[in-house]
Image (tube, rainbow, N blue to C red; front, side):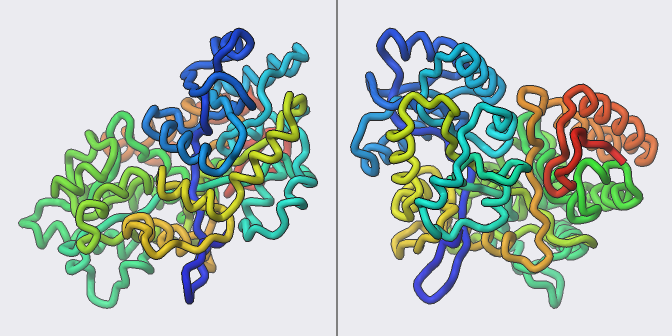
Length: 447
């Protein structure tokens, strides 16, 4: 999984690989599509690919064009939201009427299908050979078993962005690409003081922002080493104390931000954390003014969240040979570099970054590599196996933020109360934990 450059070794990849080309039409495909929320297609026939990825029209069209250049046969691309996706696969399988050949989704979309709905992928991975896919991603593809169930396809992550003015406000001796969380706090304070006591650091804490991913994949792993099993630990209390301090040095309008690139381009913030796809427009405008940086490290290490996507064969694929060929086509270095160009999703295979790659994408690749390759890196995943109920876990973290950071509530009592809400959900679903917590046992438990 290394994205390499001439004279350098790079391990880049990107996530959310959303979709593949073509449309579902004709009576059989139309009936199938009518059961999919967020249905989007192109073309009139061909191999049917069902995916949770690339649902936005512009992303889907760019990827469809890419598909036409890398695969000779026609593909009908059908998109679905995550919850209906799982239900559709199970329903068609149980009715012995599977109308699609290939599945695409993030790790958490595919994990619930391991109990009989996916074909094992060890043989296919063997045919693909050594593509340079990171070992931890190959391990994820085993879905807690001894066999592989999907082929890692692409990945994304979350990064820091800073403009040249903010870089000049770094505390003495601090390197922007080797920050600790204490360094980040000192930097936010220095930037505020240099700006007439007006904060310059921003978080995407608006209604559709991704601040909960910072809590789940960065703050908690870096301070506690876990996400769920350490939810109410003494280390978690310290993490929330830290976040209160950092928030006091955040742009007040962060509670309205949904994508930080807009605030950065407008000059409302000069330092920000967000999903890489929600930062990249800032360095695209003036690449010489910007840096994209790896996340800071905390007492337990450098926690980071990888959004890993994969390609899986349904257990009853109606065109296994065609789907296998399509996976092979999409696993080539050239196809994955074109996906990076088209939709800013990083390869999971070893691929040389072309000289003409735009600077914003190169900066993203290098920062993601730095996170993953850190000696003390702690890989975290979004919640796995919860399907449409993932939002309930998100709400627990959001409610903690609103109560503790915005409302000044007691940290210990808030965590104790929300831990009970979280445990009731996990008891109902009876799902194992996900990284960085130990992926063992039938039910994830809050300590």
